[in-house]
Amino acid sequence: MEFSTDLKSRIKKTIAKKGLLKPCTNCNHDEAIIIEPFIRLDLQDDSSVLSSGPEAIPSIAIVCAGCGKID
Figure 1 (cartoon, helix red, strand yellow):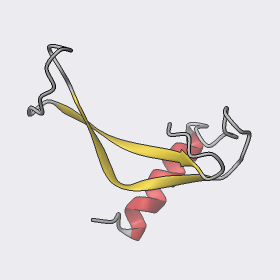
Figure 2 (cartoon, helix red, strand yellow):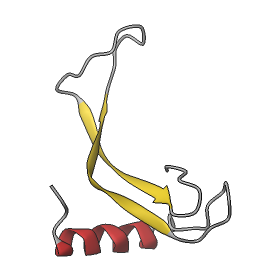
Figure 3 (cartoon, helix red, strand yellow):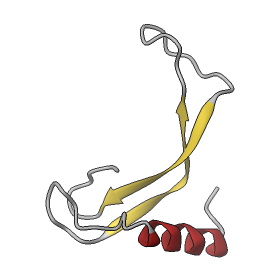
Figure 4 (cartoon, one colour):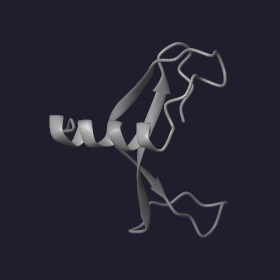
């Protein structure tokens, strides 16, 4: 499911306000792409077992349009 135009605008403004849209540290390209939809980062109690539980952090993936580095 893609972000609404309003949500995408709010995300971009927040990211820019926090100074997160800087040139890529890998290739110095200055264009970033926001991947849709959200990314879920599951919290793990045990690093030897991969599980998806109720505890997770919804996140936004920012990808460099030049080299593909994900932040």
